[in-house]
Length: 355
Image 1 (cartoon, rainbow, N blue to C red):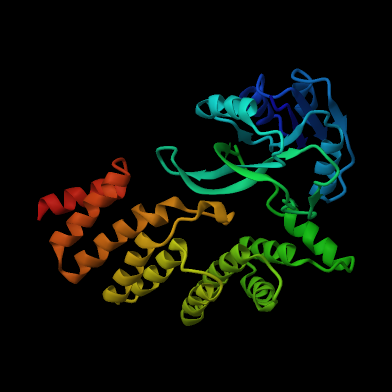
Image 2 (cartoon, rainbow, N blue to C red):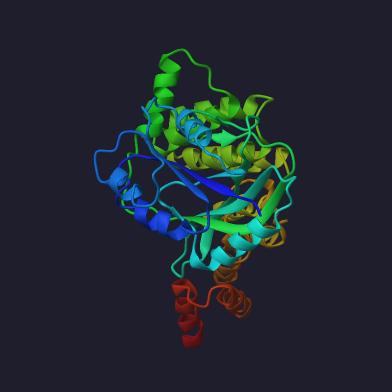
């Protein structure tokens, strides 16, 4: 059976850490907790679960701290979690079964990472992350922010999901400050870091600078295709917020120069035409979203609702505004089959019943 070292880096996580460790206790053979300067009860709480709690100086580098946590591990595989992550009860049996059945030549296990949820708790934003990593020198974290393991070897994909459920707000400026410092120190951002730097600028509503950074990333030959596609989406939203709607549409269409149309981008294009009253074009793009391939193993960000619920609901709107109430009602019922609890679906149902 595979043995697991849970490796965490934490700072001022007294609000989250007990919930996280409770969710994984008894499922891993070892817990490594690296504290980077807590001033609350984080260390005290963590010490109730493991004696392997270490202090490590924070150097504005997440990879550095994570690599230190991995260096203290002694089991077959290292597993990382953030303090505001949990393993839901429904996932625990699958977790144990995988430990028992894992082929010893497996190097990395990818698991789903659910980071946003709808009103019923169903994941609305998800993607795969490297979660169990063979404990050897070959694998190490890179990137001061939005750190990642450069995967290689025998990789398997599991349907086990880790859920990210943060309480309250963290430091919204932390990541941008790190990037600014790196640039001030003369460091050249590699493509992945350039992409995430652009996203941080976007989060901080610095839209012009975000577009400049992301366009530079898009024009370069280097860079992961999924990051390229997502960069087109972020640029489009920046252009929209700057009042440049045509540039936003062109940015969305540009995504298709990198790969087949993604449902998420098709929904955004459909939204553009719907807002401009071009219902036939909007219908085309929402229908395209419904039939877009769903490749969850690409590693890119996924919004599952863009493959069914969102385009179905928006097709309902398109047909209603076009005067085809019967077809609109049919699409609303199809959307309701996806989410019978949806307030939008229930509202529309009452609307059609009143006609």
